[in-house]
Image 1 (cartoon, rainbow, N blue to C red):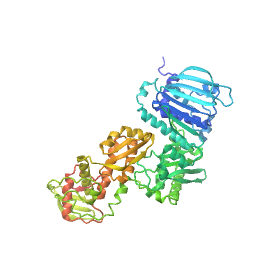
Image 2: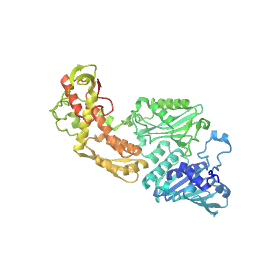
Image 3: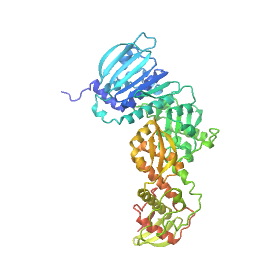
Image 4: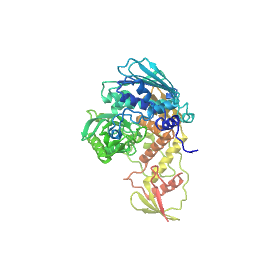
Length: 569
């Protein structure tokens, strides 16, 4: 008896569904693309319990005849391709013929459709990949698909789904993407019998983005003039200089109307900003890139979110030059008035460099507590006086080159970096001061913050983390939160930007990212309090600084990871 056998169609479909159907949002994506390919002008999406128990997508497209509806449930059955050459010039969203049979194999699947001009429609029911019935059905022209009880036939897959709120957030995010890219189509999204949004029609792109994604984008984006070069075209909305995010979640690129993840285009976008964007930050953007379909490959993965570029160098140059040109000339009459600092802490630190310098010896002397103008302005309590001087065995030789000093040690010679060492000392003092107090300052005027659904779901899971750090962030209906109190170490003027950046990091990297955001804030505050390039510390100051550094828990590096000293044996 042969050991190798052909899998049954039902098993093969369930295996294939593992690549196509990762979560309920993947079903919505595939069905939305089918509706758009069918020429729909109205699409309605409804779901319950994060799409796990019930999910419906209905459109007014061309519909299908009974024979076509039955054929559509076969694997690799599609109306988009005829031969291999068609694969090189695909303009439709779908083309693989895997979505419907994959969905039907892992749900209770109901397909109701009526072709344009037909007298009546048809209904097909498939339960876990097993056909149940096909019968006549009265309905308007178009297609209605209902998928219920996701992964009931594959329990092992169901346990990997996230909470209802998280899955619902991904569905909302998916519908928003396609609603943004298709202004001629009216989208309606219904969650648990409540309308989440209806996409506006016949409005400008900036108005459409503001209605779908949030009003804050009106002040942060400007319109990129449509630009063409040969077969390449680029248009959309760009971030004004100064607006930035900690993650790529709001850097959205559409290629021929399809939302994609393409690192080459993202890096080209960042290169267009060059020095106008801090390192590690991303600009919010909604860009629409048009290119000859033969110059890209969308057949990389069944989910079709990844693409490959054939003329990557030429396309990246076009992207970068177009964006750099747009940023180099006035984008809007009120551009200068709407500029925002890109980073919550960097904006507040600007004031530190303009104030009067404090005496160099103050932060170093063991007998002097940490209290000066900078600490008072940031509301940070002064730590207790340091412990008695430590016998390090280091003997100061003298200054080598600013900011380096030389020490002789029992083990050899030490090259000591004054600024890096001072930053480490300040950083650990700030952490100690923050740990000793739970000082919270209420906001005189609460700040209302609107987030995207995925970020809201992440904030719901990380609420305790923000509370422990001194933030009072309360749900305020829909995707809106209200900030009523902040920790004492944070400047109230920078609270909104800091919370937005922290929320973006929590969404991208999990709750622990909120702690990293606080640590990054303390690192920047420490850098502002440390010695500056034009300061000239005395030998006494440097010797005292070295002793304090060796008392730190992590004396070898500054908060940015640079070495504080190097020892040569």
